Image 1 (cartoon, rainbow, N blue to C red):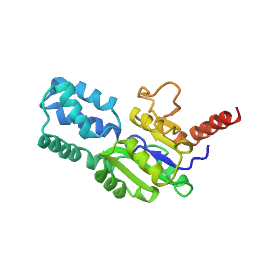
Image 2 (cartoon, rainbow, N blue to C red; image 1 turned 180 degrees about the vertical axis):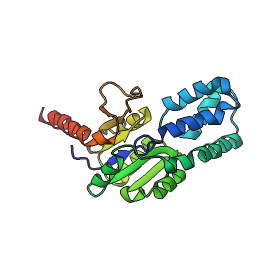
Image 3 (cartoon, rainbow, N blue to C red; image 1 turned 30 degrees about the vertical axis):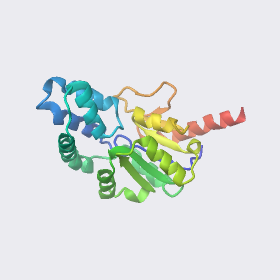
Amino acid sequence: MNPSAIFFDFDGVILDSAGIKTEAFRQLFAAEFSGQVDAIVALHVRHSGVSRYRKFEMIYEEILEEPLSTEKRAHLGRQFEALVTDAVLACPEVPGGLSVLRKFCDEVPLFVVSGTPEDELQRIVSLRNLDRYFAQVCGSPRPKTEILRNILCDRRLDGRSCVFVGDGLTDFEAASAFKMPFIGIVPPSLTSPFPDEVATIPDLRAFDAALAALKQFHDSKVSL
């Protein structure tokens, strides 16, 4: 297919930063809750793409079974940002990422749809000199489904003619809400979180091949 727009998650899709965020969750809770830290990290991974603040709430409710005050929630957010910012600014792009952005940015609008807080995300994208490639960079607290709905409406795009590239089930579910074709990023060392029918690639070096496969699938459906 020839997409009318491409939507990307950020951590683990554009930047090789997913592991940085995972380690930050471990560090954030290891000292005070060492016995529960593996469960906390597992929750973070399971809910990839969800706002870190929503994850804090889930951790306290489901694992720690303690109340989470507004002040503590904000403090955790500041600690988390301090743990990850320098590392994310320094980490490499996902292999093939820059090539894909350079190839498609002049052909179709590109968007970032991430669970990272939007002001932090936009600052990182700008400091990495990636903002030139994107029509819009969007993050939490808005959920990804709301972000997609707003962009599709504002730009009069049909989700069925776009593509979403993500590495988490949240990405797939957001794309599915608008019948948007989806390409999953799953590094060889990880287990796919997606249903078996979802096309996956290890990194963006295989993006063109995945896009061609989507086109072939789309054309076969149209010809039926």
